[in-house]
Amino acid sequence: AQSVTQLDSHVSVSEGTPVLLRCNYSSSYSPSLFWYVQHPNKGLQLLLKYTSAATLVKGINGFEAEFKKSETSFHLTKPSAHMSDAAEYFCVVNDYKLSFGAGTTVTVRA
Amino acid sequence: GAVVSQHPSWVICKSGTSVKIECRSLDFQATTMFWYRQFPKQSLMLMATSNEGSKATYEQGVEKDKFLINHASLTLSTLTVTSAHPEDSSFYICSATSGQGFSYNSPLHFGNGTRLTVT
Image 1 (cartoon, rainbow over the protein chains, first blue to last red):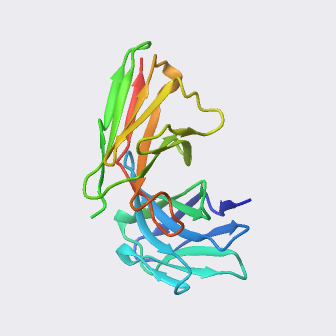
Image 2 (image 1 turned 30 degrees about the horizontal axis):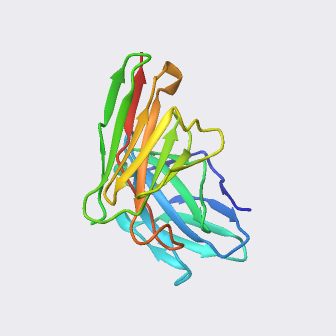
């Protein structure tokens, strides 16, 4: 069985400050993990993916995520938030069946 | 690369009519496509998995006769909402994966979604 838990339903940050979105997973296997971003009324765009190579994964738009097997976590970070980062973020686990987290809404204050 | 085009982006229809949504992979062959439904402020709910040339596999609780899926070619899958009712109003998103079937490492490429409103 697998599941994905995004620990924060809403994160609010000031522009220029760091962003942390937390994701924990459970899986019977060693899954691959993804982060996607969704802007209003749009589909999902891939930010980055972990597929058993380097544990620190760099993605687009300055985002990165670290896979920690001992903590079963795959948290997403960005050193400096931009107004355009305001969106919904989904953590996705794939161990031959996809599981989506519930999503984290990010708001960025000017 | 790996662009998925979904059309229309929004549609309003009357109760009792049918609506067809198209999902196309523009620059790759998509052996497997997925259809999701998303309610406001919620995550994506997988409705069905469609493989080119075969019948779609529906998730539990999804009415196959109401949500008809056709994947007639490697670049096109369609979702038809038959006899639509107001409760079918939602945001529908398709996604596709390249390669043979759905593999462990392959990310999904998503369409931009279709906002369906049934009046």
